[in-house]
Image (cartoon, rainbow, N blue to C red; front, side):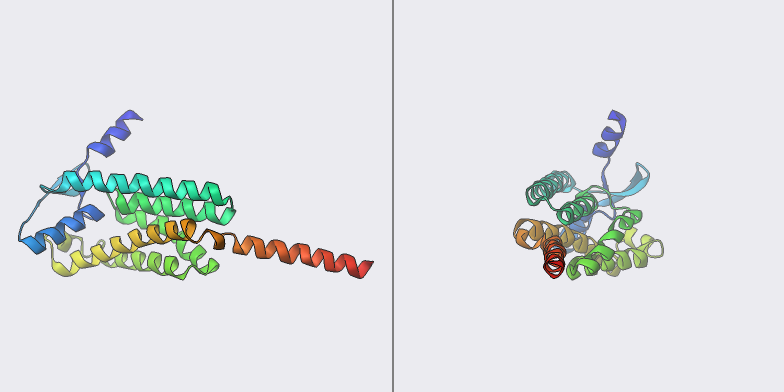
Length: 203
């Protein structure tokens, strides 16, 4: 277990991760360029700013999971727990050192549940992230390695979509907590209202 933890914390930023795409933008704006290299089973980016971004995004990961956990516990509704759990998994992909293409499979439930619950932003962003990933990998991965602008933009948009999913979920749970139990409360009222009406008819 300790080896697994050490392996993940010691590895550099993978080429498709959100911090890496920010470094691409930084290089594009200021005319710098990090290096790419292979290690830990992935293509990575080496950059002067990678250490700082790793720490900042690690803090974002911890903060987002803490916020999701706290609100799920406070709201105490099944819908809130499911949304917080799925968003926490999305946060792991969005803020981690690695964003492998297969991680997008974790977003599939957000498409279905987002559509079923009327959370259209979450469903749409999850679907967009899935589509962008399918376009980028494997066909355009080599273009990402050599930093072709179109492919870099595509991966940046995918990562931004997943970051927005986490932000919207936190907002829905934290600021829109009065709506998280709408479906459950409505069902509760209809079920118990129907029972009362049936009882009055029998009486």
